[in-house]
Image 1 (cartoon, helix red, strand yellow):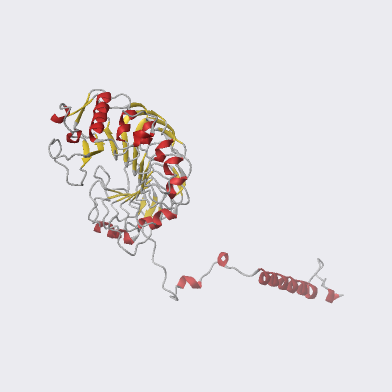
Image 2 (tube, rainbow, N blue to C red):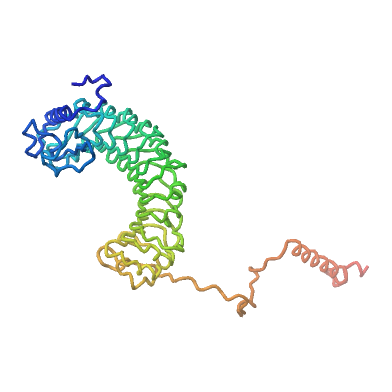
Length: 455
């Protein structure tokens, strides 16, 4: 048996020792595997339904639950609770009991909370000694305390998922300090007590592809510099401010940009994201993001969701809106958009009733009549009524250059615009002429000339 403070716990445990440690872990959390092998203590634990082992020579593993076919030296690599285990009571997570697996355990996934499975207490520091760990998923609800900064020391960790309504404190920067590490996915959703800022190091990590921290108290500003090759950036219902950095959309991998209900985020609509070849989802609902929807000169077939509702986006829907040919959900209600709704909107075949919203029933927008007849799913409210469009018509076309207009020959005095020097010249000339007339022809009250010439 390993001594907890000893580095020997990091050594690879032999299969019998690994199975003994696993059974002790199951007993501590009140769990029973549903396979017949669980009751046979002499049987290999590799036959457990929620356990995965690796054959020593890399050969295929036997079917789930089968005791035969395992070769001597098979190593226990994954524990993933997904329905093959019965739970009586969970309690705290006994991390010390997993230490004999430190050199082989690559994945620990406790699954989702249930009536009988809801771990509590703090996250055990021993997790940081599972040096082979590549995936750590703790989503069973009631963990409290702070996120151990020691988790940043795990050299092979690729995916970290921590979902608990009771975790507090801040996100330790150590999670993203290892530039030589392999962290690809960081998910901190639903940690409603988690506060502070997201470490800027995470946005610079050369391996990080996914950041998700929705429904937390994360604050601060979005970093202006993002060099991590992000595929997913999901920061929904957070207190972040700032604008969407342009660098985010210059990468070659971005698939989802979700800042939904991050109502302090402002700036302009990232137009490069809208034309990105890999983008599938842009959700800026209830943000202060402004700007306009650009005209497109190439198709963006992979974009499935575009939600700009309740944002400050303005301008018009471009005639090239059909370039979003893969759209399955479009929401632009309660924005500052106006003008004519292009007929090309009806060419997007993926939009259906309930997936296209130009206007809600509670507030009108300034789209002009007539509305396109070929997109009824977009021009109706959720109750099936035709949306109220503005009675305004499109502005008249600009006049033909050099065309004669009779009205041009009649100009009002108010439209004159003369240089000040010319106006002063006319005033002085008029005053001089009046003075000359008075000198030559002026009269006094007696009817006699009073000018200088009469004397």
